[in-house]
Amino acid sequence: MFTGIAVAMFALLHPPALKAEPLFPEWYGKGPVSPLEFEVGTRYWYSSGKSQKTLYDQSGGILLSRLTWTGETSNSAEGYFNFKAAGVFVKGYFGVGILGGGNLQDEDFPAFGFSPYSSTNSNAKDGHLSYASADLGYYLLDTARVKLGPFVGYHFYGEKMNAFGCTQTATNPAVCAGGIPTSVRVITEKDNWYSLRTGVAGEWTIVPNLKLSGDAAYLPYVKMSGSDTHWLRLGIDFSGPIPETAHGTGMQFEGVLSYYFNDYLSLGVGGRYWRMDAPHGMAHFDEVTLGGTAQAIKFETNRYGAFVQLGLKY
Image 1: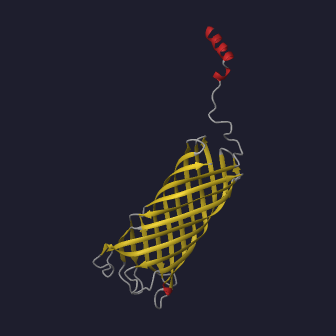
Image 2 (image 1 turned 180 degrees about the vertical axis):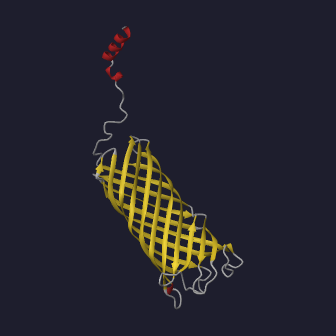
Image 3 (image 1 turned 135 degrees about the horizontal axis):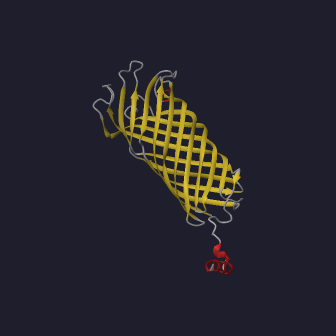
């Protein structure tokens, strides 16, 4: 009895003491939010990838060769930005990186008197990449807790890959006979990819200081412009690098989990995946060889990895 009376008297004297503190502030889950937000930051992206091209004859019906670059890791530095105002958002990033270790498998298939099958391995190193992306969109759902909306954008990706040395791993005795030391550069592939992006971007404030954001994009049109240099044949069979062009489609995904220490500073971890396919292409031997003809070629490239970022919001 006395305990009940004591509790009642304490409640009358100190009513806030019996009220539970809300987990979220009053603004959480409500909208619209501040009409203007601007965030910039830097990232470190560690990634790996695979690139492949397949060469056919002039008709596109006979398989001649295939070059597959695998395991090329990259350490990249980039900057990013994200501008939001009244539902409209503009976001993007740009970066450069160094391509490290990897392998090139160069296959030649029996055709037009070439036999037997040849497969060689070379060390991939001393390459680099660069990239940039920008999107414009509108949040159809725009609250302080959840944002979701479509966007359109543009993406650029350039990669230069170098292969050194050559070891025959199949049975053709005429290709890389006796081996070529890894100090000798044998092949350089330089490709630039230009892509249109369309997709959906979103943000979810899980708790006031923790936010999950990301986007998924389809690339309805991808254009590739590149060149292939076989250094040991340059000046003998070819007057210069072989120009290559192709087009196709692709896809890209990205997500990041960010923790906000205060209204301005955040730290995030995330990941992304890119894939571009260009099955409609030509290798322009006609431009660099006497009596040469353009031949059908297919390209594909993908890159994936994780990043950390440091952001400032204004």
